[in-house]
Amino acid sequence: MSIKQVMVVGAGQMGAGIAQVCAQYGFSVKLNDIADEALEKGKAGIEKRLARSVEKGRLAEEEQQKTLENLSYTTDLNEASTCDLVIEAIVENMNVKTSLFKKLDEFAPEHAILASNTSSLPITEIAAVTNRPSQVIGMHFMNPVPVMKLVEIIRGLQTSDETYQSIKDMTEKICKSPVEVNDFPGFVSNRVLMPMINEAIYTVYEGVATPEDVDTVMKLGMNHPMGPLTLADFIGLDTCLYIMEVLHEGFGDSKYRPCPLLRKYVKAGWLGKKSGRGFYTYEN
Ligand SMILES: CC(=O)CC(=O)SCCNC(=O)CCNC(=O)[C@H](O)C(C)(C)COP(=O)(O)OP(=O)(O)OC[C@H]1O[C@@H](n2cnc3c(N)ncnc32)[C@H](O)[C@@H]1OP(=O)(O)O
Ligand SMILES: NC(=O)C1=CN([C@@H]2O[C@H](COP(=O)(O)OP(=O)(O)OC[C@H]3O[C@@H](n4cnc5c(N)ncnc54)[C@H](OP(=O)(O)O)[C@@H]3O)[C@@H](O)[C@H]2O)C=CC1
Image (cartoon, rainbow, N blue to C red; front, side, top):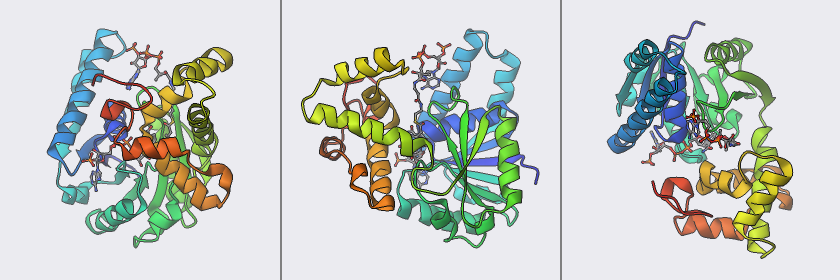
């Protein structure tokens, strides 16, 4: 199937990045969010990043212009009716995602593929609420989307080979590297990454070291580009907690229990960079 028109649902840090990259590589993209304010913020972020790429000589002004023309913004989900692909990037919560997928199944044309950027939730379960489970798939981008090369492609139990091939081709067209994984909690990326972040939080919780020192150990000792607590703040502590809960529940293994300090911070509204405070403080 040839994909031309794409809708991205959720204009947060992931959705805005996904919309930008798809538009840069020639797809016509509608970015959707329930809130006008979120759309405005997403749009401003895209325009700022494109302008910076032109300044740095990475993007020609003509390409910047074309990318901007390829993008439109809407709070009306009905506009999915003209799309070949919808990529969902809203909050990491199964109930919220399944209620959105039911609506998308109603609004999107019969041939359209419905993809989720979920970090950890079962694609098979999301697909099961639609009447097109063979056309539902995981398309898991990494943060920051314009920089990171990987897209994990997750096949649900009923995902067809045709759907998989279309998404693999699309991933290559936007210059990312696809890796195929099966539908298990956290897939590969977050099954490996998130327990490390959770363990780093435990070292702070147990007073082994300060956040700064934990991050320094991993940066200078293991050559990680960011320490795990900076990375947790960057991902969003709410998202980190949701992922740990999915791993814990999905595998029923206590090794995935979320650190109480992570729960406490999320309850306090300390969600990391996006809320201005997490393990560190930020001026947004
Ligand atoms: C939770 C999940 O489900 C899955 C996930 O995504 S897990 C998270 C995966 N991501 C990571 O692990 C990221 C780890 N960190 C890094 O790789 C790097 O720190 C980084 C690429 C984010 C920043 O790199 P850096 O060298 O430390 O900083 P910096 O010099 O400011 O940035 C390098 C380039 O990245 C780009 N960049 C940085 N942050 C960006 C952002 N938020 N959005 C877009 N571009 C960004 C900039 O364009 C910058 O290039 P210029 O200087 O030319 O503008
Ligand atoms: N953060 C990360 O590093 C990564 C996250 N992901 C996944 O991507 C998804 C989004 O994460 P992220 O971008 O960080 O989250 P953000 O909180 O930055 O953005 C989510 C956006 O979706 C909006 N939204 C919520 N519900 C709906 C809805 N029903 N319809 C339309 N928009 C809605 C939110 O609006 P409002 O704020 O008003 O609620 C917000 O603007 C999650 O599934 C997450 O697990 C995947 C890879 C990496």
